[in-house]
Image (tube, one colour):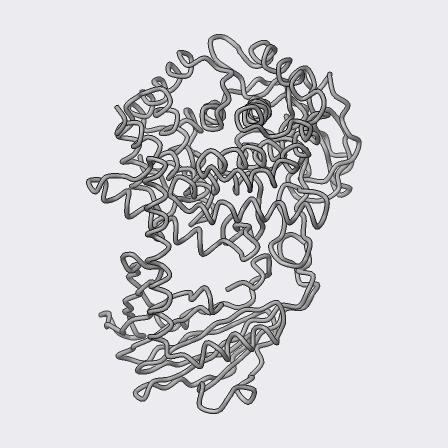
Length: 603
């Protein structure tokens, strides 16, 4: 359990007692965001399982409360634990509102991610109310409490930026009956889904009733992303990454637009307007909340700058919200201004975290080389920004001087830089000789064992002080990575001709049908979780049939109906790897699915 704010350390955890081998069959309520968990357990010294009852969870957004109702046929023990002190605040609650209440406060210097401090003390409060047939006993254990539940009751969990707000949220929630809160959230859920469905119809992304699995996936993904979007608008990159990453948020924005959540997409852009206004900068990832956290990586002026611009353009295209885009135009111009100095020989370098480098699909030493993906992103953003200004009549004085000329030069040299033997490389080593390499930078050590300030020791090779003197090896290999090619049609970069793209897509589909391998790893066993969406989107652009990819994509979703960070092949099947319930992969895949289906409906 984390938050508020969403960029916060883990504040507490709730687990079943180790002595009880508990299983749960979990299902989300159709048309709503609440979940029902049917429980069973195998007690000690017993060979058969027994039915225990149910937990019923919902997050009541307007009340800032997570609510867990329980109805148990046998007693069950849960451990509420925290790295911080759990205080008994029952005496601070109004009479008869609850049976017990507790709080946890993390200090201002508690690390959120890496060593980034949360910046301000944050509090989480817990209230327990038992029904007439229920009881809850709390016993102190190392690191927290053992809660033994019987009959019926409810657990209320509230977060706040400090104790007064968390206490007030809990006090307000406890004044309402749990069933009233559940009904309130379900009304909100129905209104939310109805608005999204209407927006999908407006932009031609509403699947037919025959696509029952797709419609169910839309609900799953919408609710799971909504749960990970902060009040500031930023969306977590998954439970393991409580920061708002620019690359991830671009894919989430695209997916939200396709699924019809225009307000959620707008909130992402407003988040970046607010961050830049407050701090004067945007980096690879930023915190959500009051702390001013920045996750600064190598080459933060490439890739993410284009993603910011493309997100604003895509929002304008789908919503026709000219007034809001006008507010974003300055942000777009400044993003492109920051990216221009990175160009060398018509090429942009790699960003150290937003590319295949972070996933180990490319060596970190290529970071200063030309990046096909980053260059294509720059071209798509620059061309799109110029086109929008011309078509909608927005002033061009917000665009940096020299942007048009830089774009034309990069377009004309693209094939010389990346085309090789009938295909394209994902990196161009010769850029290293054309652009000065900074002596120091903030990022990941060449040896991968630390994150922080680094010193250059060779071409593309940066080490931390602890690794000084270790031998490094620059890499001049020209790599091919099919997933990177698929970025181009996804972002609208028209630098590879449609016939060549169609041939590549047919080859990727043929390889999948023959070997079961996806584009990210035509020879290996690990793929990125958004391969499905990128391939479906490219199939829609080129008119190829990829219905089997659609079926495969829906089959590998996790228990929450989402896609995961990576998949690895084992015994002929794709197994989840990395962070589950990921917003970026899930949104990109849904965007690809809905774009593919809409292209088929239009033929």
